[in-house]
Length: 317
Image (tube, rainbow, N blue to C red):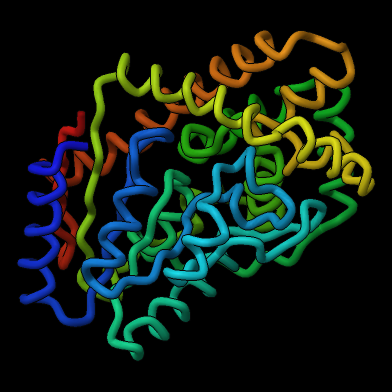
């Protein structure tokens, strides 16, 4: 990112802050666009605290494959919604919403700036659209049935969701099995799609949505470099430690990009170069799906702007 581009973003936030004391900044766009490094600079400049909206970074022991910021940076700048559950535990979007709202309130009490950073649109939407999420208790028997179905016929649950709740199917990545299961569970319990059951409300606090847009080719080059860096940072060893701790490959957390490919690498003894290419390819596909999701915010900015929300898109190079 050029210094002039950072200055533009900095000034935008400064001006918004002067008009909105109790506010939230959301930094969004696809993976590998530079959100993390920007958020660290902004946190230092505005006495900010960072809230991860990456659904992978909630898991402890999973650092390299989820591209978490290093421990030293987290000591210097408070980070939230990282390392909060174990890889075999469940943490719903409703829980993230409830916990994040409290975190934002606590940050405001400290007279600091809440910086929500990440690319999981489902998480971001819980505060951007401020859903009232229906209370649907877990139905373990129903869930087990779905998991067995998915193991027997990979991709079948996402296809089923497309039929009963196409809007949620667009929003949820096909590999996010636990989120697909949850959406199907809501439909099974309530008899209506999750996308209908979840009602929108105005935002609780003024919100500045900052999108970082990069040319696709530039983004894909950065994805490849990050995939290479993950292996240099001992991704294979991290995955092996998880397996040694009896975190099974079929767990949802182990199906994330980087982990799934590394398990296959260990199982089939592929080359590290092949592993890099597999991770990069899967990440590029994920980034494409993220663009589809995040363009909705761009459309909102153009014609359906939410009350008390401002939208800014910055071209980054």
